Length: 266
Image (cartoon, rainbow, N blue to C red; front, top):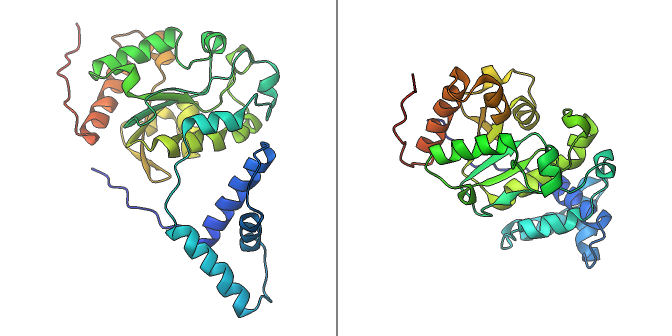
C-alpha cells in the first residue's frame, strides 16, 4: 500500500501561505489581525537582497516561533463564516443557496464532488438529489452512515444548467475547499467524477485511467472514482458500479475497516 510521508515545506513556502491566508482574511472583513504579524508575513515574501544580517535573523526567529507555536485549528464554522454571502465569482449572482458541506467535522473519509445541482441549490446541502441517493447507497454498502463522513464539492454554488465549473469559478472556490479538507483532516479523500478528480489532481487524465489507485493530494491519499450520476446513467448493477465498489474496498482497507462481502447480482 502506498504511504504518504509528512511534507516539510520550506520557510519561503510557509511565508507565502501565511501571507495569502492573512490577505484573504483581511479581504473578507476580519478585524483584529496584529499589524506586526502582517509585517512579518510581508517581509518574508518580498525580495530583499540588501537586508542586514540582524534583519534576517529577526525574521527567521519570528518564523521559527511561528513554526514552534501551538497549531491553531480552523473550524468548518469559521471557514463558512469567512465565506459569508460569497460573491467571489459570478456563480454567486445566480445561486439560491451556497452549498458549503455536510457531515462529520472529524470524518476519516471525505467525498468531494464537482458542484451543486438543482436539488442541492434549493436545499443548501450537497448530494441530496438522485445522485445523492446513489452516493448514500455506496456509503451504506460500505456499512457507514452519511453522518460518519464529510461531503462537499469543488464549487459551492450551482453552475447554470449544471454546466461544468469554469476556471475562474474553481479558482475562487478552491482555497475554501482546501481549508475545509485541512480542517477535517481526513485519512482518505474520494474524488467523485472526472471534474473533481482532474481539478484536485491538476490532471487531464481520464477518470477511467485515474481510478483504482491512490494519488497524493497535499499529503492526503485521494481515490478517484466514477460520479454517482454516471452510475445512474449506466445502471445500478453495471460494470461501472462494481468498479466503484472495487475502489471503495481499497478505501476501507486503507482505513482498516471491515470489508463487507458483496456479490454481484446476476
